[in-house]
Amino acid sequence: MGSGQRVAVFGAYGHTGRFVVAELRERGFVPVLSGRDAGRLGALARETGLEARTASAEDAASLDRALAGTTAVINCAGPFAVTAAPVIEAALRAGIPYLDVAAEIEANLDTFARFAERARDAKTVVVPAMAFFGGLGDLLATAAMGDWSAADEAHIAYGLNSWHPTEGTRTAGAVSRRRREGRRIRYSGGRLEYRDDAPPTLEWTFPGPMGRRAVIGEFTMADVVTLPSHLPIPAVTTYMTVEAARDIAAPDTPAPAPVDAHGRSAQTFLVDVVVRAGGAERRAVARGRDIYAVTAPLVVEALSRVLTGRTRAVGVASAGEAFDAPGFLRALAPHIDVDLPR
Picture 1: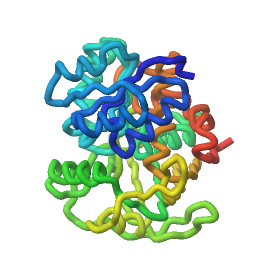
Picture 2: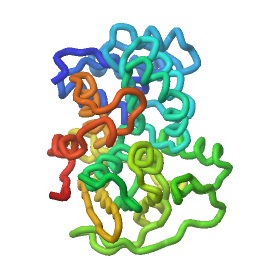
Picture 3: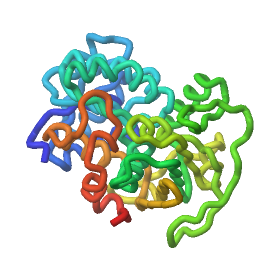
């Protein structure tokens, strides 16, 4: 448990940030609310009784004040192309760990490229993409690899029954598209490729009860950054169910709506990860509900492990490199049900 440790949450009033604040409190941490919108921040502070510190990614001094006296910072404020580097800089100045929930491919690449050496020299842990996209897939692939030292290919199929995006998801997606000039990305031959053609529509056989579904192939997510950062796999492909891909593409799809006391939506997910090497195949599967809500136990479990010294890496490290993947995944019950290779 957190034993009253103070943790800064940047972007605390956002959709995912609120889930993170609630999970931190559930586990005994004391969130310090932060973000640039003083009005929304103040409203959340009055609602929760927690301390609020207004800060902006454009104002280094305000970030220093926001992190003062905290043991770590969780960045929930997208677009991460704008916020990740300034908040990491502030964490390095404060000498505390940094975690974020970035799904933006480019922002995660930037974090590894810009901060790997500095974070390692400072003996600080920086964990990007510690979320549903990027973190969960990496943990599942790492667990599936087991004692394999390398694999030929990894496939991550996202079986979402729907995808009602938050405002932050839409904004971050627009920033990513601008950075890559509207092109799509795939990871093949050990490198990222930028393509102008349309991704293929395929079929994927998910474990029961989902079964065979139409998916968008090469629906590339942050897993193409997190997995190759530590696993020798030259081809990483991600897939998305057609229904969810249509939802996220449609401009009139509404934001997620809460349907239970925890604020979760009715969205369900099944993540099916297959790794292959030399004709052999291994599989790991996760099932759960609400990709935004489930990010909270993912990042808070990571935080707890970082603060208690249960990490396998120093510097910038993805979830699968930083943590014992099978143990981490099993610790997420009852938030996520997992099937792992024995």
